[in-house]
Length: 436
Image 1 (cartoon, rainbow, N blue to C red):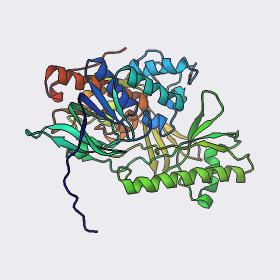
Image 2: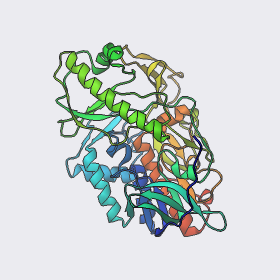
Image 3: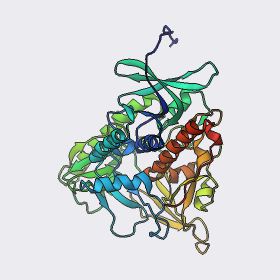
Image 4: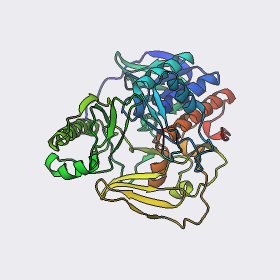
């Protein structure tokens, strides 16, 4: 159809701050907190009705390991640990008591949302929920000096000196006209949900889904989940919606509806297999998105950077979560570990195991996240934090998990605040984070 023109309009400015954060996942909230703790006035914008992103809105209740490959040396602390401690006081988290190279914490994501509210208010951050960045405003010098936001009452503006794009889909960067790119094969999204009366399966839920996939029109892939801290609900990650661009509103709508259809189909196939029907207790308000747009940054993290634990002078975070790439052809997930192991997990077959390198070679203790991979080229006052990070497909498969992106959020907020305090472009800021 032919495009239409809309009349130009003046937009009210609701606030003017030092740092504006677009996106209120834990990553965005942590950015806002660190900027506020550095002495900046801060506003944060979130499209959902709550903070917490993938955890709180998408029902993903797992935080992965905070430790080096020895399962003993702590490499992640900061606000991630503070949230863990705060949830612990409310019996709203379960921690692994034995060394686990993958899972460390299982969160009560409803309690997490409230805890993030408290942290935002404690740090005197101005929040805007049910709001989304739709454009930028430039000053007479052409510099991004504000964002145009669509909220319940219409459009409004927030002026700021520095910006953090934590939208996941790089919405602020896109509005600013910055270069973006996509992986050739985008990892499919998953609609997670919480069930009560979850059965104990003899053959595994993945096998059940495989056996009934054709009947219920279910794409296959890795299936996993976890019981809540109270053990009364089970979070299932068992759906897959391939081949859609979830940064587009039309495709996102299709994916949300299809994800819910698949969840109901899983309920039905479990009952048809002779088990008690699981009771659906909670749906995501946003489908779990793994991969959409990436920024063209000052540095692109390579898969070898991750697997060989390469060091960076501007390291702002560390991790050990494996390279984890979900695919649809063939269906399953391929894991590459820092110690050289390689595993392909199929939804119904025995795992295929091997090595991607000689296992006798030294194992790096962790990999590093460079600040430059978060700084988009072509702008001096925007930094990103989240899954729009500039990283190759394999590297992104490791970096995209929440405990890694939480660190990116803290660094982005700190660097944005430093740029304001020093009156410097963000690319000129010198910053690194040492081990906790």
